[in-house]
Length: 183
Image 1 (cartoon, rainbow, N blue to C red):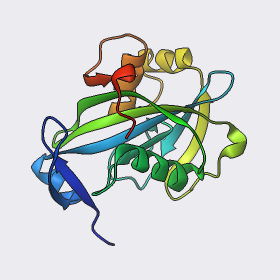
Image 2 (cartoon, rainbow, N blue to C red; image 1 turned 30 degrees about the horizontal axis):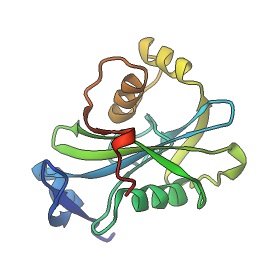
Image 3 (cartoon, one colour; image 1 turned 90 degrees about the horizontal axis):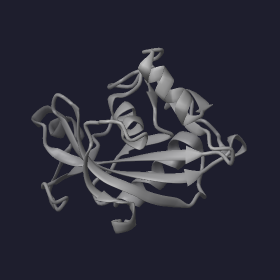
Image 4 (cartoon, rainbow, N blue to C red; image 1 turned 180 degrees about the horizontal axis):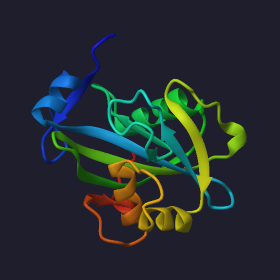
């Protein structure tokens, strides 16, 4: 298996280096990620169940797409790559929502960008090596699932859902929607 390289960033999201993903996670270096919320016309969120072979959060419910930003990529490029690799979607308009800091795990520290877009079930060609399944839930139902501890949510997805609903979350917001730089 080939090594994946990610950019190391400072607290202001400036690239200060490049390292192997495994080393970045081992040392707790700050790096970049993206998340995408795809909504259907009737307002349901496409939710993925992470594949059982995933290193972190196997079988947890997750955003429509969650990805690391590879070295040399910008946030939007990583989001489009993730949509293509995981869901087979190559054409979708994405809007930036927030940029935030979050401790994803004990030594997994990221600055991430959340995007929103529209997507329908007919657009999706699920990559079964990346995902176990996909679902469509309304946001209120997902919050009820969190409150009742009905299913396992990835840490970041749970925090994004809490933030989105106006509840306290662990997200440290850096930039909010209208202030966004779309890249």
